[in-house]
Image 1 (tube, one colour):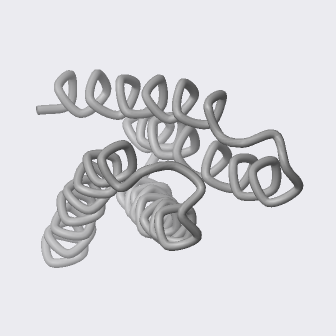
Image 2 (cartoon, helix red, strand yellow; image 1 turned 180 degrees about the vertical axis):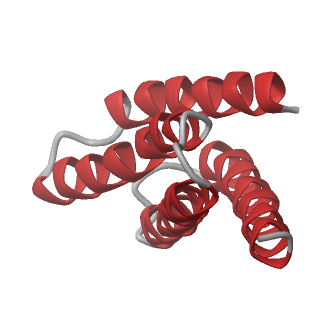
Length: 116
């Protein structure tokens, strides 16, 4: 599962990079793009970091950051979609994936806390 999540979060980050490069070159496009790019790429980076945790507490802490970044990514994508910068056909699959990642990492945090 670790390898699958590493790959999945990396693919998601790459999709977001492509998505942001297609946003309108306006103030809103730049600012919203910057926010979603930061949070979405942070998911994979922090997940990898969580796997190198030196303790259970550090693992849970890093995984909690991943959960927060995934949820934040959903927020920024919803805001972009509702502002009608790109079409819903483009943003909907990204929101779906961000929602799924949020659910996965939420479950992982809950289970890790139970087992600590």
